[in-house]
Image (cartoon, rainbow, N blue to C red; front, side, top):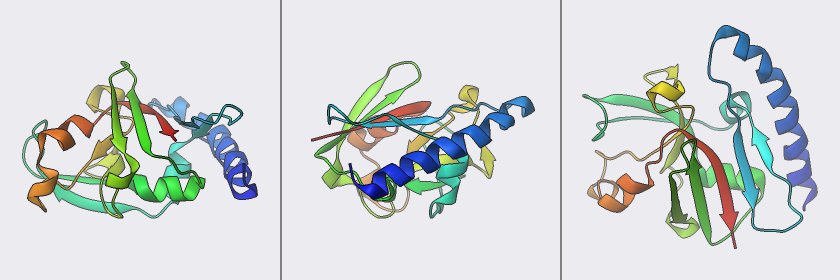
Length: 164
């Protein structure tokens, strides 16, 4: 583990502790758990506040699951992995209901997909596809409107695993 990784781990734990006060407001406070395939690597829990502290990408798009244009904002998955200083061959993504999908890390782009933390400016409850949703700018390029990318558009995401 690199020093940068350990620093981010400690920052994530601190931000998670701060986020616990948010639960009193009735919001879904579910950290994003990130792990790697390394046997000695700890699971990192990232709070909404930590994710919000990273460079945000915002776009509007239609989806096959929502009505009309929806504005999504969040951090790109590629930027998130860079922030965590982890790399691998694939990214396993798992939802609260254990739906899982794998995506090659090589398919991650600077602007897509994003780990959306907000829809139309509001955090997403579990009932409304939150707390995190992997979203592509489907309308911006036909390459994003594919069955493969629709399958990768996992909502109620709570676990990521970077696999060698």
